[in-house]
Length: 466
Image 1 (cartoon, rainbow, N blue to C red):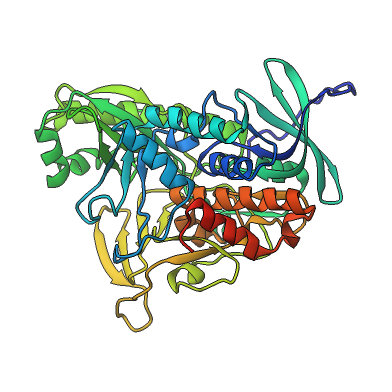
Image 2 (spheres, rainbow, N blue to C red):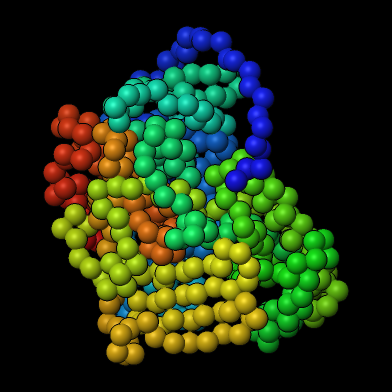
């Protein structure tokens, strides 16, 4: 609830909106899903425009400072299961020495990748422009024009005022599904009680000395933060993790803040989350400076420009992907992507987090800070599932004809979202939507009627392992 009960209204005069673009494919949102959708569509030769609210692409990978991209390999790290445009991005980053493979549980270069978020902005620009994508930054979608499940145009607004964008196919990659929502598509939010995973806010912290990393390993960091925050009197709710900088040994990125009881699709709550996130980060850094060895000279280098929403709207499509589908590795004839990231559920209202891994292991961090390990399998034994599958049908809102969705707003349950929402998965969903939209334009069919085999063939041409 927004808290605004009694509203005063003004009437906006009717006006003619100039058409500023008429293209084959319009991609709304330039995060990991939107970037991939636009590049994939444009590479197939259809005219493509991408609308993004920031002045650069990447979303949580840039504006959100989330620098870790998860594994492209199966659970046993023997088979590459993710590829395509993500490979092109990583190759360009490697040319700039702007990415490294993270070791430990992951084997070097077959596990997760830590990317430089600023270099990523440059690489996204390069690949989009090379593909022929028309880019329109600092622009918001503010309305949708359409009837009977078909969109004729989206209304956007920027420094030039309002404009209309017409397209044959629209792809909603806004994360919250703002276009699908305005178009009237059916959606769900949260778990059975309507509670959603809380958003987070990342920060880069510099001035650390080597003993700071020993403090992470020893648990001194967690212990210091296990108390009430001085700005609101609440117990610190976050599950803190970090990655090292690729350039500076004294700098890290911390996923530090977590704002509970928040719906980022509500304007007032989204705004408040930004304020609360910064207050949390301020408290965290001050606390670590004063209490933890290695942080004596710590200082904030950069706070993420935007809050990272984990969950808002999920649009009901031709298939609803479930947790069981993921954990059992269920196959789909219309598969368009794979993944291994666990079902990761952050407590919506307080501390705690649960990870359900494909190998059958459940790791639970409860509200008191205790960590327990169990099994989700019926027989208590480990599972040999190597990866899960994502079907094309989750991209197709069931009550829309020329609208696709990609990213964390696709058709899935609350639990499945806990795994699908990470960037490498959203990138696959985006490139599949881009290919599907392009083929739709080339064959003059709606995305739902496109031959899935042709989508899969083009994805393989892009480099996806199917």
